[in-house]
Length: 158
Image (cartoon, rainbow, N blue to C red; front, side, top):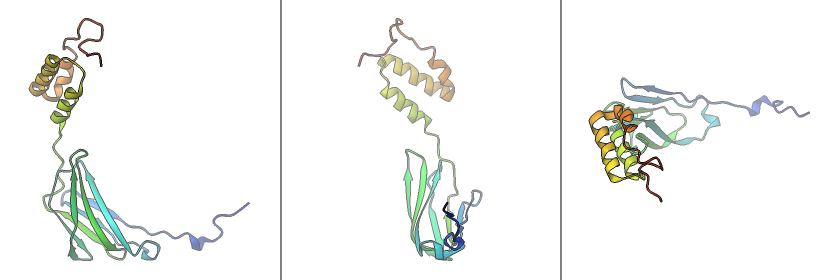
C-alpha cells in the first residue's frame, strides 16, 4: 500500500479571495495568501453574467492599470480582462455605472423562435402579435392558435 500523503510538505495551498459588492459596483481580488505556490504573474478574466454594459476602472496594488472589457450579447456577459497581475498584489475592479442587470431580450428571443419555426407565415404573425400585445403572458394564447386539420397542424413538410 502506498501512502500518498506521506510527505505533507508537497501539499501547499494558497487562497485568493474574490468579493463582489453589488451595491457599490466593486469586485475585489485579494493577493494570494501564499504567492510562492502560484504563478508570479496571473492574467485575470472576471465575467459577470446577466449584467448590462458598464465603464470599468481597475487598480492593481493601488495603481490604475489598463484593462479590456468585452460584452457578449448572446450570454449577456460583461468580461473584464486584466493581464499581468502580480500574485503578491490585490486587485480592485470598479464598475463605474454599477453592476446593473441586463435587459431581458425575450422579445428578440420570441422573434427568433418564430422566425425559425416551420409553420405558415400567417400563424407566425398571429403568434408574434400575441407576444407583442400580451408580453410574456402570451404563452397561454399560443396554445389556442389554429392547429390545422390534425395531420401535423401548420407545419410544412421539410
